[in-house]
Image 1 (cartoon, rainbow, N blue to C red):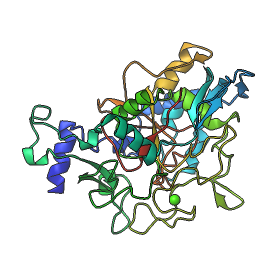
Image 2 (cartoon, protein in one colour):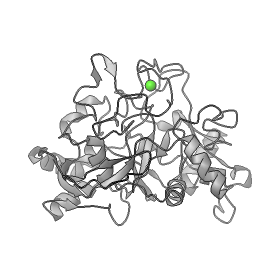
Image 3 (spheres, rainbow, N blue to C red):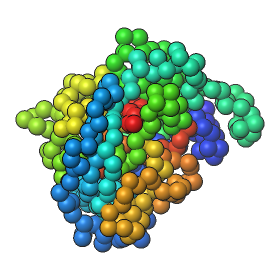
Image 4 (cartoon, rainbow, N blue to C red):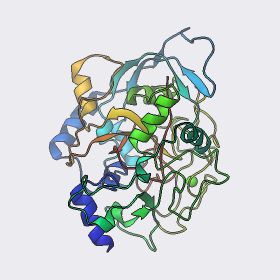
Length: 375
Ligand SMILES: [Ca+2]
């Protein structure tokens, strides 16, 4: 049954699909093409980080509640190929090279990811219905059996034993009835979890919230400038070592992935955590690494950084490519995710590294994907 289901999901691009997970969690078994790899290697051998130059004295008075000022300025964006060695499975930095110069204007950014409590206020005010709660129709998906057209979303489901990490479908399931109020399925809830990041959010859900709040989603460049906190070329938002004095600085995953009870929670949490449980970065932003992935506004293109680096010495307020593109194939409408999640591990995805990228199909949500806004 599950196999049947997967087949439908894969071949119909059904909005409730989990297809994007392959791209999100990287460590994909499909490497970037040889041609791309060579191009990346050549570009990257010349690339290096230049000191971040922050704009000065541009902070407006009367900042919005719960937001911090990000001064903007010029910085080196992207990942060093050397960071490949920090994940057991290769490919983690390939779409994040070459390092290139970017300028962004100043902006306000939410201190934390949008919480369940904040999202509830939006729902109460608007009666908005998220993508995961809308039943797909026969008209939209004529090739899908009616019984498979159910509301729900993708949920991480640990495996009974260690598995080959090449196939993400072993630990992701489409779960009927999973949505932002029931992040892990119909038997889960967000009761007493008001200060947890909202998850099971599709791109258009994040956009709708942002519009209601008088905000918008960050561009990928704004997100990375903010995450770096004015520092230059650090591997993590907090420095260059995964732990500081033996302590983890973000909610990620320790232990055997993705095995049942494999998460040893050395960082204090097995699974999702409330927001702001770790120190902020120098700009006062919490959880720019780990806990949940965050939607940003840019379309995802695996060669966007190469393109930008060829176009101009400094890319000014880049807003992403005009259309999505993935050198590994597929034609899904994908946008960028940033920051990694509580499922990222040195074994597998390592995308809590500040310069790295994730992505997902715009109507796909999961229980480790949320967002934060800017204005
Ligand atoms: Ca953890």
